[in-house]
Every structure is written in structure tokens, then in C-alpha cells.
Length: 397
Ligand SMILES: *Cc1c(COP(=O)(O)O)cnc(C)c1O
Image (cartoon, rainbow, N blue to C red):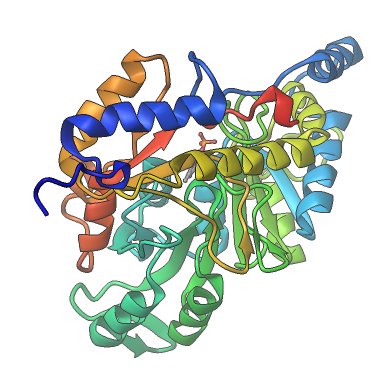
């Protein structure tokens, strides 16, 4: 039927950008609209002012303890240790999980570079695993088959048979806030004897079933960078249900100082990674907004879902069934990656911030030599995904 007019659902090429622009405007109104801007107001001004007035702006103070308590309470994590940023939290989590220099760590290819950087800071080697297209997280079936074919158990350790290096841990990242397939991934970690660490930097407010992301693995981390759901300016958190690991995390991130009233005694090479009180004061105010922020991010998704409903060449990324996403970053998957750069140009020129998803990490210069499985899904997603304006709308809060 060559004379049929092309329905809206099949728009491609030059027609795609105007159709997406129309959908975005319908969902969120006129530009400019940022990718993810913080929501700051009187509560934050008040909390930071009280912190300054207290005189305790640095590495000790009541706000740090209060912020840790708030994050514990909200996530259900038994222990929370506040640190300077999410990357530092990951680095320390890897050390606490028993990752030694020269070990390999299973890392998603489709993640922000910080995940693999933290592995490198530990002196370990990222071993990249592929994504599955629904949650965008690691593909459990493909990972299990890969480990079965390429690892041996030697003296109770999982060893990469191709490199003879120990595989000590698996980092799962919850992409844009959408929970990964944690049940299957946790069984893989158990079955192969690797520690499970959750990079929940993007998923504060997201639940796998009834469990908050970050609290399922042995250790989890959150980030409070300026673009995350909750910000402390810069900041991070290590969470765990293991009291010994928690104590160790606190010790290592505060220069491994042994309490003594008059002397500087340190029993390890520790880090100066404690979150300053000033940042934590901002975090306390932000935590009081968290339920409203998550509600607004989820409403934003509904707005986009309605606006994109007729556009078949574009798939809006949706929380996996049974899980609850915080919808930190809204994302669309294009049928045809050829159109992506033109679309990005058109959206940004119109005042709507839009970005390509991260370049899969095995394609970046520092990580090209790392061990990896077939990464064809991560590569396809890496070419076809874009993030669209995700700042929660004031009227939704
Ligand atoms: C934001 C982020 C981090 C770390 O963030 P910091 O900027 O160091 O706080 C780590 N992993 C992922 C996936 C992130 O999105």
C-alpha cells in the first residue's frame, strides 16, 4: 500500500526529531528544561545556616550522624556510613568486600565510568558483562553461561580460566534508577562465590520487590552528587547489614585513627573520605523531600508515557514488572540509532537538555584491554538510548 500516508508511529529520519519534540513539550511544557536539576529551597537554606551557626562544618558534627540515620531509616539498611562521594564509597566497598589488587571484578559495560574507575582505584581489573534490554542491568542468563564456560573454582575461589586471575566481586548497577534482576544476580554471586556489591548511586527510592536497592548485596553505595535524586552537593554513602563491615567502613574512611585523647595513632592506611557536616546538613533537608521527589519523578514518567504512547519507533524505558523505580533519569530507546545525533542536536537547540547514554566502558581508552564477554546488547543500547529532561516538575510535588 505505497499510497498510505505514514502513520505517526512509524516516524523515522528527519521526521523523528519534530515528533519527539512535540511529545516532550506535551509532557512537560515549554523549554528550557534541564536534565536533572536539584530541588532546593527554604529547608536547605535553613539547615545549612544552622550548620554554619553550629561552628561544625567539617568532618564531625550532628548532621552527619542525622543524615546517616535518615538514609538507614528510609532504605532499611542496618548501617550507613557517609563519605565524600559515591566513587569513594565504591572504592571502599570493594576493599571491604575482599577485593585485592590484581583481582577481577565483574562490572556492567553499560554504566557511568565511576563504577569501573573505583575498581581501578583498588588496583583491580574490570571484567565487563553485558546488559539486558528491559532493566538495562546485567543479563543474568548470559552472565551465568559465561561464568560456567570461563571460570574454575580453585580453593574456594572463582578464577577466570583465561587470565588465571581471581574474580572477587560482581557490581550490579541499577541503571537510571531501574532495579536490576537482583534475584538471579544474587544467586549467581552465591553460586560462583563472588561478593555482590550494588552500585545504587542512581536508585535511592527504588525497590526490588519490597527491598530497597543497595540493601540486597553484601554492600551497597549511594551517590548524592548534584544531579542525583537527593544531593549533598557532593557525597556518598556505604550501606551494609554486616556490623563488622560497617565498623571497618567507618574506620577506613576516617584515616583509620584509633581513638586516643592526645595522640595520633593509625593502625592502617585509611582514607580522608568522611562526609563534611556542611554537606550532610544539606542532605538532611533533602531527605525530608525524598518521598515527594520520587513521587514527582514517577509522575513525570506517566506524563512521558502518555505523550510517547503513539510513537512506536521510540520506547520509553519503564520499571521492570514487580519493581518500583525512582525514575531518576527518563530514557528513550530509538529503533534506529542512525537518527540519534540529529535528535540530540534538535532537542538541545530547542532548550530541552538531552544526552546520549554513557559510551559502554569497554570502548573507552582506559578499559579497552579489559576482559569481557560478548557485549552486543550493551553496544546496541549504547548507540540507541538517550536521556530526556528529568527534573521533577514543581507542580507534581
Ligand atoms: C553518580 C554515579 C556514581 C558516583 O558518583 P559520585 O559523583 O562519585 O558521587 C557511581 N556510579 C554511578 C552509576 C553513578 O551514576
